[in-house]
Structure formats: structure tokens, C-alpha cells
Image (cartoon, rainbow, N blue to C red; front, side):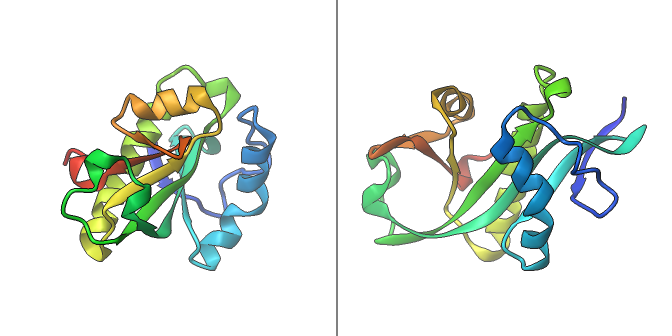
Length: 164
């Protein structure tokens, strides 16, 4: 099994992707390619070289925009302006048949590294994620993401803290 992550392309089978969450399935099937064409987000898929059209998992990255520092966890606010540019991990999902195989971690680590590369080119102090539930928030917290004081399901990570 030779896995790799690639940009979503026309030959990837989005129709048969099922992660068990209809909203995430639908987004990949109906919206991801449109967002790529309009440069609203970029989607990356995890595939096995032996069946390169079958999507094992995916994530999408996008700009989040300017975030007021007053909304951030207090420990993150030191020496920052009133508003900072941010990125967002807009979606992350693993197909049901591939779950519990470490693919979510693989996708997240790749997304974090890609976000750091983007931030080095255009700026972006924090990487945000909107967790779907408390279990998702715990998953992201294991990788250093911190919840916002106003909403425990919105988490952020300082891009500078992402390992090279």
C-alpha cells in the first residue's frame, strides 16, 4: 500500500466517497471542485497508488480572513495587532472503510505543513478548525489546537508552532 496526498482532480471518484457524515460527503461530491475552480478553497485527497481514483480521505484549506485578537485564547495574543490574517482547515474526513488507520492524523499533519508553507508565502498567523463535536475538538487538541474562549468547537493553532 503506497499512500500519497494529491490535489483533488477530475479522475478522483467523489461520488462513492462515504465518511459516515452526509454533510462532509455532500461537500466533497458537489462543492469541492467548484470551490477549487473559483479559488475559494483547495481540496487534497489521500489515495493508494494501487487504486488512485479511490479517495481514502480528504481535507480542504482556505483563507479564513482577519480575526480580532480579542476573540483568541489569552496566551496567543501577545504582541499581535488588533486583527490578524488566518487560514482555516475547512474540512477533514476519512472514508468509513479506512477509518481507525491513522489516516486522519496523516491528513491533519499534511494540512498543517501545507498551511505553514502558505503562511510563509502570503501571511497567516493562525490555522483554525471548526470541530463538528467534542470528540473532534479533542482530536485537534492532541495536535496543539486551542479552543476559543467563546466556543470550544472553534480551535486554532499558531502557524509558527507547526514543526518544519
